[in-house]
Length: 202
Length: 202
View 1 (tube, rainbow over the protein chains, first blue to last red):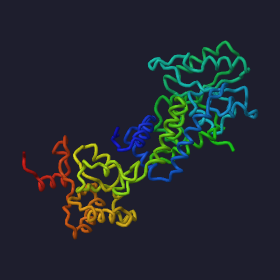
View 2 (cartoon, chains in turn purple, red; view 1 turned 120 degrees about the vertical axis):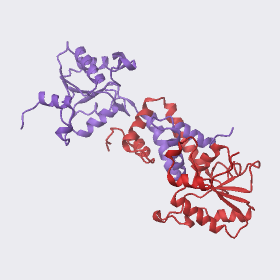
View 3 (cartoon, rainbow over the protein chains, first blue to last red; view 1 turned 90 degrees about the vertical axis):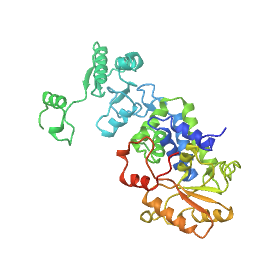
View 4 (tube, each protein chain N blue to C red; view 1 turned 45 degrees about the vertical axis):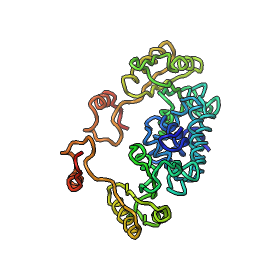
């Protein structure tokens, strides 16, 4: 069987690459031809990194963040505050928050947001396991760090209700002006929130 | 050593993915997390396809197109016109022209265009090997199928001069209106060329 590319191997690589999100066949071909021009080591490094990552990374049984062990390094770090959980939508948000160096507690990755339109209900997410953790681990504060969208707000509210019979403080990330942005470019909702929630000038 | 991602394996995969052209660290992370969510088979298929492609594809010694054998399937196809060579910039252009099903001769891949600003001269390209092929293989027609840019025109002219002492017809792809485009949107240069090079209505 002859492929469009006169090479089954190229055809296969392009077809696998184009399964990645945001990568069409044209881009996949560009990437494949790039790898063909480079040293063989580069293709080996890439291919092996992908396989080894997939084979050896799974999810932390406690917070559902990615982890090479049963328990992730964050959950296993005794220097972190074991009484405070930051609830995030996905693994990327953990990385984003860690990059701020402003949070020293644990995480809980929901794996998505409640979105009836997309058919995602509470039972599709790690919400019950959060509720269980809060009671079993004697958590004192749950920080809701979901995106300020309709889905995020819905999920926040659902979790808040689920936790209402437990003795735990539930907080949410502050809405306000983006640092470095001009006041006149802030949208009205955000500006309104930042007036309501103004804080003492220290 | 602890990485930004709390996983050396993820860090390594992201770093390898972000070496690909047009893929930054954020996109690389998105791709890696996508693979982590999918079946392990998908990551294996991708990684192995990349490695196997790189290990088994090299370049045709005759036309410099990619090939799994010493001679590519196009050069090795006796049904194709062995007296006509289509000169292209790169491997992608071979694929593009093959997709038209309008060319039945052989190819010659230059590996780039003459571009003094980028430091690419004739000796960096497969031009001498083209001149040798034309004389040794008794080629009757050379079709210059380079992009209609300054670099393409410069390269066309250089090759034309190099072939001037050989008994070979040198042609160039027609410049004219794009099929399906409205006349009023054609640029003046293209429209001018298409008037100069008008053809009998059949």
